[in-house]
Image 1 (cartoon, helix red, strand yellow):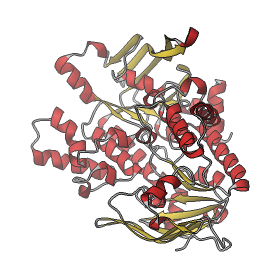
Image 2 (spheres, one colour):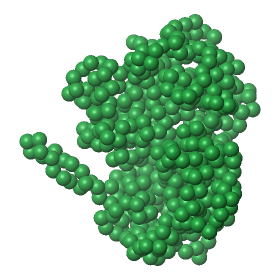
Image 3 (cartoon, one colour):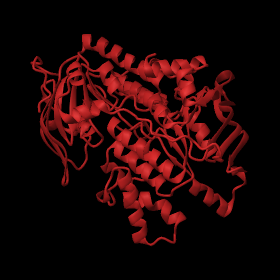
Image 4 (spheres, rainbow, N blue to C red):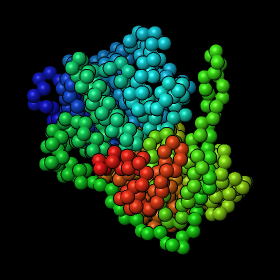
Length: 539
């Protein structure tokens, strides 16, 4: 089915009968799509439907792929251009906001250097001027203390802050076409609204000058409603339906589109037993980071930045504790401290009543078995050199050496099936999967060990709405079966409302409010909590 607007005589981007094949896998199948000058088009569909592959084909960033069809930018055939010509076009005429910022940013350079490099390369301004522009771009994308943050390295920023850096970098040279691959995935609800408003503002400004268009790839249907003018729906590599936002949302024709729109997180949690013991507890936990502050005459002096301040919380058996707050509020830092993966400056973390600092030797290994984590960015947490069988089975090899190779494989296949994958994934590598599929692999790697407590750091941020619902139901079923305790970190309050028994709200490293989910959602006491809920549910 074509997604070409009938009134677009000379579109900025024209894709005709595009097919992309990786060996025996047909990732994109006969896709025809056009984007007019100054138009905002959304490409939606489940993970693995071919959305990102279509965008990467435009930039010719696909390796070992067989591409057929036509891709034209303002009439120029991109598939016929040399690699040198494409390097001049990338970033300047066509820019992309990638889904996984940690792997897209260079860990050896500060974020200011990386943004400024793009500006210097394409605009030819001085490094000093480019650096100032970088600060301004960071401010516009919602990063607080941008002049200080511009000297930070990617690992020193939260997931949401890194995503904002990617957006700033993509917008640095004001491209004619912006390919936005899940641009708000890692952002909290308040910043998400700011970014959408920013993209709309910049697109409208540039549409009047250069006709800047945007191809938005997302599973966030609320974002599509707010941002896009037209929608193309992809399933299994094909465009199955397209039309205006109003047509798609109010009268979807294809069963697949109808299923996507109807998908919402549903609450299926059981109440926690009053006698359930506390599994993991934080008492007055403090986490400080060393930082550099400008001193006299250009010298630098060391300072301390308090990321978590006197945090107190507990997770009981069979309970899900939700932690919410804006990016940089200290959610992940607190969780890593509770796992013993982040050094604390004060306070105590206990597992089953025993301080985790007292675990040594074999006890420490046993502690690692019972405390597991699913990280926010699945691509950087999965080894690119190992097959999925080795990645998921690695923990079993370490903690269950009594299992034979065949027994281990059987358990790996079983847990992959539970998260929606089959045994054909065993001998493939992480780069061969979509972002959502990689997140399911990361969840499988954790679940295969049957731990007591799992820290879930944005486990559904990379998942489309239908798969998100499946994963949440899976996590709920496993919690019932094994009496697991979850620490669930998310900026998606709808997900927290569906999964959590209690919720903790963090702001600037401090817990400002906590309580039962129903009480916090229905009767928030703190102004910051009310702000988050208003942004999420438009109250």
